[in-house]
Length: 315
Image (cartoon, rainbow, N blue to C red; front, side, top):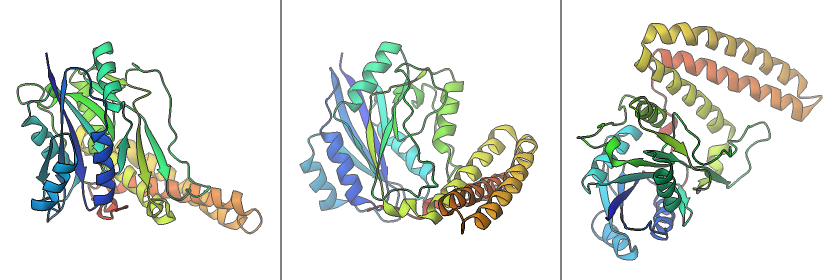
């Protein structure tokens, strides 16, 4: 029996990266007895891929590709439009990948095979990051964490994931991304709710995608802003799920500790820098990161949005 699989990509103002992503998807090895298609959602006031531009892409790719437009600015809006677009094809499976990533040829094959072997409804794989410019020495880069395929997980990002169509189908779980989370954590929240609804979720250690990290994303300002955004969205997520009082009881003491020790580390690092530059800088920026996390948690408790994703890195 033939199964249908739809790969969904959300994009905004990064046509070159999107092109590389789509070309990698077109080179995928198709799982046995599987019909594949691609849906692309442009999250922009004015879509780029219309008319001749869309036709040119469709002619170049061998896989069927469908373009959709979501003019409301915000990642969860685009992701929900992508899910609705995928549902038009009545999929057995839906895969999500970011527009700044490229899939390995056996990527989807590995995810599907693992789901069947372990009787899982969600499979999440690793992202190999390719830096245009090395990150500063004080930055703790996100390293690949290897773990056995089939390891149970309780949350996942959307940068490399396969999920059963039942999870989003209107006659299934009918889950969608929370559109209040416009500044981060919407993917973690979605898959936490997926797990809570009883779906089995696993890790697939050899289903790789590659992500391009532009130089603009590893500047000091962007790295610190990312930490502030993550802390803001993390706290706001808890406010939405558990209430402001419970979130406040957890995050206010945590935030104050982070800010106190962050300020202390920043001052000591600044004083140390003239005598031991690298060590002083590492302590100084460690302190700034803790300050960003502490202030971000407080910002999230107040429900104040963060503008990290207003800046688009890459082309």
